Amino acid sequence: MATIKSLNKWANAHTYYPLDLVRIALGVFLFMKGVDFMSNHQQMAEMIRPFQDLPGGMLIMHYVAPAHFLGGFLLVIGLLTRWAVLAQMPIIIGAIMVNFLGEMNVNNLILASIVFILLVFFLLYGSGKHSADYYLKMQK
Image 1 (tube, rainbow, N blue to C red):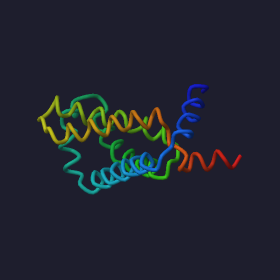
Image 2: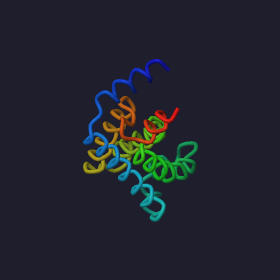
Image 3: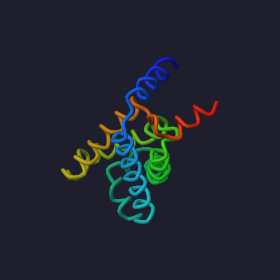
Image 4: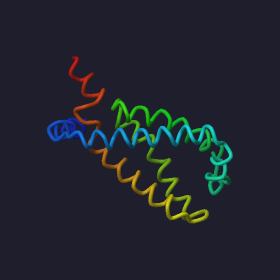
């Protein structure tokens, strides 16, 4: 708990609008991917084909779209940012693994790697000063 508090203090002292814009852009991207997966069920089924034989393969399919949808929204407003990032991590790790277990698509691998790096950054950085988390913390 003390580690999170010290990370929050550091992030609030070093907050910048461009970082908030990156967090918002990442949230919008994840939200749109969630909407895309919800509207294009066939594409989603094709992407998780390498994990189809694993136990819980159907659970993966029902987890990815809502997690992107809700996690992206939470990242945009900066609410429960670290929890939203943690919910995205297994999905993005799976997106990277799909390229090695299935058919290699370099563009998807690069995109998933960039998103993974940004998620790790916001896991450590938090939501920053211009977020719902900070606003709610200041209301105490």
